Image (tube, rainbow, N blue to C red; front, side, top):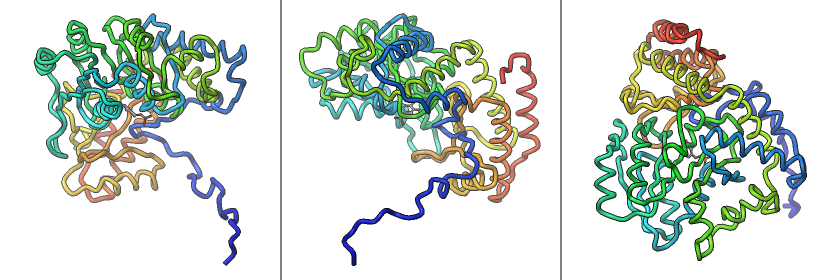
Length: 410
Ligand SMILES: *Cc1c(COP(=O)(O)O)cnc(C)c1O
């Protein structure tokens, strides 16, 4: 046997990529607009004048998206989880107490991160009891009780829990309670930013985190977060070191605030983010929220008319990611595989819950994508031996979209 290490064979990407890109209708990443894809193909000097202008504009447009006047807006070379970790590790350390409002995988992730750096972590848990039921909704009374028992430095929560399709509709009330209590409020708006209202300043949120590949319809791997003045004050005055070098907000602010070197910025990803934000500014938040709500509600009506059951009751249902209950005996992988093979459409399974999920974030909320995913899902259920009324579902989707045709931006 030769000891030489030879180059592997059959390594053309085209061997493994589908001949036509799949339509990504799952819980993220989502399809990106052409302008975003084009920008993502460009590399420029990360410290030059052009990059300075790009950063200034990304910050200005982010202020609009987050609805904040704070200029402490920082991009992160990393997934949304890295931005979550920047939030956690810059305002928490051993001896600090945090309350994690838990609705599922992503809200819980804040807790895992806080535990890892030795903060004192408490959970207000409303996780699902079994795979067939969504977690019970958090009430303000639960939160008030927790806050009355312990003095917390920080409260964390999600706006939308992607893993189970739940919407945290009382987020502004929880934030107000936490503020009264003297705690900082950290919010994960990864799947929701720019898909539904979020008012960072008006609601008194201290750190808001988002990723690229969900609501913003940019690429995965470049994320952004905003700090309030109160939060920034804690970051600046801490007398111990942030345990992460890359995620140290003070170091990152050298680049995002003062155009100085921290690490080499993910230039193409920042340019892509610029374009994603520009499209949001051009569309306006108001129209974008309307498009998301209309699309998602029409899809939900179509799914129900087809005979399927939605996992979360309407009052707590997230529009950005719609969770569908799997009927008895349905195989999640088989349903999704047929959609890929036959229709080139991909949707998501779930972490441990008996659901499949369809995303309604950014470019996913276009009528042509809705018709395609609903039809593909219906056909796949049929193929797998389940009774669904495809025609009725498609008709309900159409009626709901057309009813508001004047408002529909497509
Ligand atoms: C997707 C998602 C995350 C994690 O994003 P990554 O880019 O995979 O790290 C966090 N929170 C929510 C609500 C999400 O939907």
